[in-house]
Image (cartoon, rainbow, N blue to C red; front, top):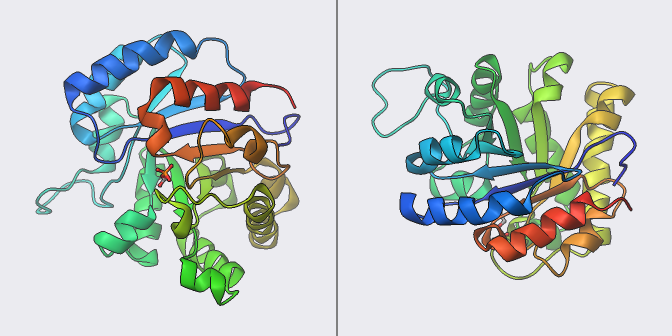
Length: 257
Ligand code: 13P
């Protein structure tokens, strides 16, 4: 983690967990543990919990994100939520391209690209997820996969907009499996992602872009992962649902290395 340039970002992805009542309890318990930390803290909650999360985190150091959005502003898209709806209610971040959305909801690199453009145009910050499957890692094509996902997701996105994009490297084989990438494996891919940004844009952008790791990050392994030079924090699933674990991860990112 290069703290001189980049402020780490710890984001919880609650996925389809927590009712409004559950989220109230979790957020109220989390708030006192997040004051004056040297990292950005985000919770990405289900759509139904956004309003509660926004109200409870007003005047705190916690920012609120959604887990998906459509690329159109409005229209006949039953069950979808638009960036303009999120932005108007005070949502700051949106996760786009999570592997679960790619896998279960058939999201493509093209729709991901459209979603990113639309989200940015409505002043949302994007957490763009990319990562390889186990089969792709075993075939040693991780870099090809990750660079293809990155190039297509960022297609026709201007360099000036990169300040509103965080990249989350999430190897699919490490998500929810308890199988974490080693800190070296994770850092190597994050470093590769940074070098791809250098090729696509510039050295300044490569130095400044935030790249998180996600995939079974927990209170025991966060410190080692986040201390790697090219890993600027984490996107955390399971461990973000437990206040004690999430706050340990926040502290790990907040400690000057
Ligand atoms: P887990 O931390 O549960 O492995 O989930 C990671 C993830 O998918 C975050 O977006």
